[in-house]
Image (tube, rainbow, N blue to C red; front, side, top):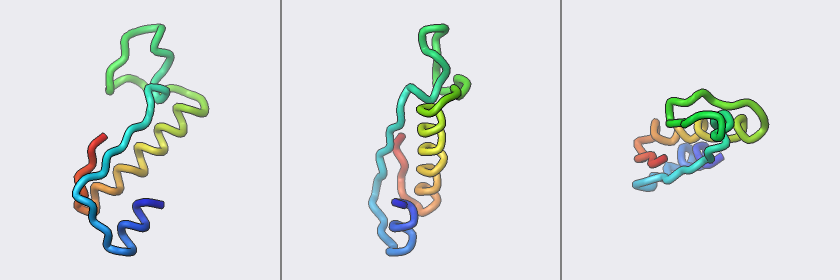
Length: 67
């Protein structure tokens, strides 16, 4: 929704800060994880993954994305 508002109303903030959650990854207690870790399964992993995919669209508007 934010992407659509920025696009349709030509709103261009200088920066957009986004954060999801460590819940995107598999169980962190099984092995060390970094940002290249495999995306987990389940509700929280799906929400985080979808959020990150949608937020990437904001950078296509020339807005600096910080995530």
